[in-house]
Image 1 (tube, one colour):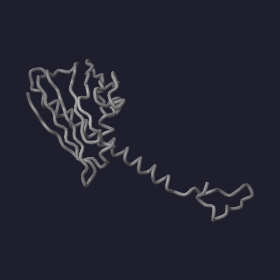
Image 2 (cartoon, one colour; image 1 turned 90 degrees about the horizontal axis):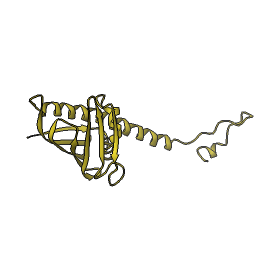
Image 3 (cartoon, helix red, strand yellow; image 1 turned 180 degrees about the vertical axis):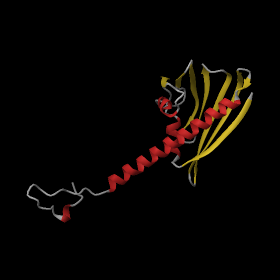
Length: 175
C-alpha cells in the first residue's frame, strides 16, 4: 500500500473549485481518457453528495467510484468500488481559502499494481492531470461568474426612439 499527496492553488473561490471537482458527469470534458461519465446513483445532497456513485468509462474499463465523505466546500472523499487495477483506492480532497484563491490538497491511499509495477506512478500522473484540468475549469467558471456579475451592474441604456429622439437622461438605467 502506498500514500501520496498532491497540492496546488487555484485562482477561484473554494465553492467554485469544489463544484468542479464534484461535477462527476463533467469529468469526460476535462480528461480525454474518460470517454464518458455518468452518475449511477445520486448522493445527499443531490446530485453529487455523500453516497453518490459515478461511472467513468475508459478505454477497456468502466470504473465505479463512490463519494464517502462530503463537506461542501471544504472536503470530500471517495473510494473506488470496481473496474480499476487497484486492490484499494481511496482519496480525500481538501479545499482551503488562500490568498491567491483556493489551496487544494489531494491525498490518496492506493494498493495494487499495473503490469507488475506499483500503482503510485500512474495514479500520481492521473491526479496531476485531473488537478490541472479542474483548476483551469474552475478559473474559467469563476471568471464567467465575475463577468456576469459585472454585466448586471452596468446600467441599461435605452436606444433612441423611432423618431431618433434620445431618451430622457434622467431615465437612463431604469426599467
